[in-house]
Each structure stands twice: as structure tokens, then as C-alpha cells.
Length: 198
Image (cartoon, rainbow, N blue to C red; front, side, top):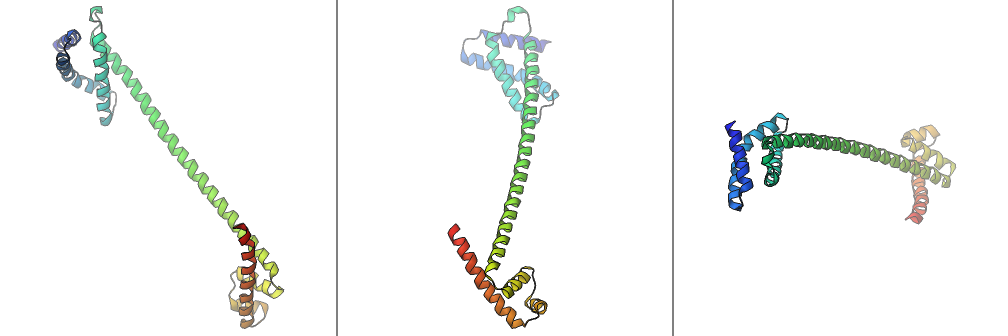
């Protein structure tokens, strides 16, 4: 109780003092009296250690701004005003925490959606490019003879030279020469096709 009276007296001294140095001295005493009380109140509301300093600082700024205009003649103790500020700050604190948490969840979800969208887009583009390449290879087979076309199709199916020779019933040397002609003709066709695009 005596601490409350001392605090009330300090509040009144602060309000009555017109000297800036005197006000600072009195406010320093007020801060020394209030810090442990406010620390306990904010700790009780579940504020994290890193948030306590910010809450304390904001509370002291509000007190500093409210003291010069507070009317002590109405009989309402200043501590009642302090409790109202603490309650208000508690609500603001939890609203802010909720907004930050919600914003963080939203950002994470947005990142996930963007990542998945980019991933799907990339796969779609890759599939389209592969399909286009397959079609170009098939078109390049048009310029080949019947034997060259059969050899090229078997090569595209990953047959070796020996397997192609056995499948077609021809010598290895014939398959080798046919592969070389296929490469040259297909290269010419694809070069002519891609040059106008660049």
C-alpha cells in the first residue's frame, strides 16, 4: 500500500514539475518502481522474453505521454489506468501474434503453391520439348531410304549394330554404313529445320 502511495506521489510530482531535468529524474524513479510490477504482469500474460522489452518500452512511453494530462482529482487511482493499458496491450499483443502467425502460414502455403506450380510447369515444358524432339526425329526419317529408316527406328529403340544386323539379316558393315548415312541425312534435315527458327 505504501508503495502505491509513493507511486501516486511520484506521478503527482511528475505532473507538477515544470523543469525538464526534474521531470526526467522523477520519471526515472517511476520507471524503477513500475518495472518489476509491469514485468510480472506481462510475464503472466505469456509474453516471450524477446517481446517483454518491447512491451515494457511501449508501456513506459504510454505512461510518459498520459501522466501530464491525467486528472488525479477525480479519485481514480493511476494504477487503474495502468491496468487498463496492460489489458489493452495484452489484447493488441495477441492480435499481433495471431496476425504474424497467420501471415507466416500464408507465406508458407503461398511458397508451396508457387513451388508446385513451377514444378508442374517445368515438367510440362520438358514433356512438350521431348515430344517436339521426337516428332522432329520422326520427320527427319522421311528423307531416308527404306533400309535407312528401318535401321534408324531400331537405333532409336536402343538396338546395337549387331542386333540390327541380325534383325534385318544383313552384314554388320552394311548396318555401319547405313548408320553413317542416316546421321548425315538426319543432321542435314534437322539443321535446315532449326536454322530458320533461330
